[in-house]
Image (cartoon, rainbow, N blue to C red; front, side):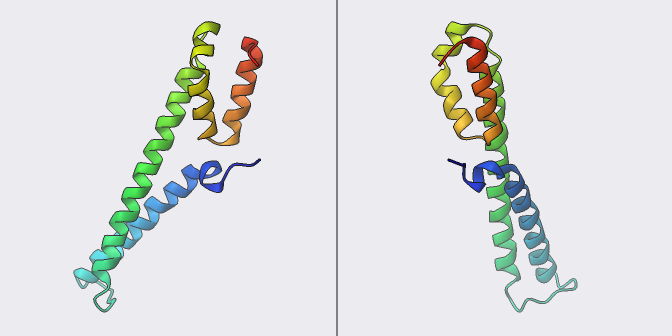
Length: 115
């Protein structure tokens, strides 16, 4: 079973949402300050939507990097006993990350002799 696009390409999508939010915020500010754009009163809403989309993108990006960091810390374990104790947490982290992390986990399990 393949993982959802929001997991496989989460970092790219979150980066795009940050850029989209910044563009919407810039458009909203340009309309509010009468620089070169006239959205007919919709500039405030464009700016507000931009801020919200940027916040979602930043939180999503941070959570992806936190999951990656946690996975790498857990995978760096050298002791088989400690690896087996934290196996549920490692598997959950791999499940929340793209498919290549499942492959890394399978390699580590094979290396440690765990089923």
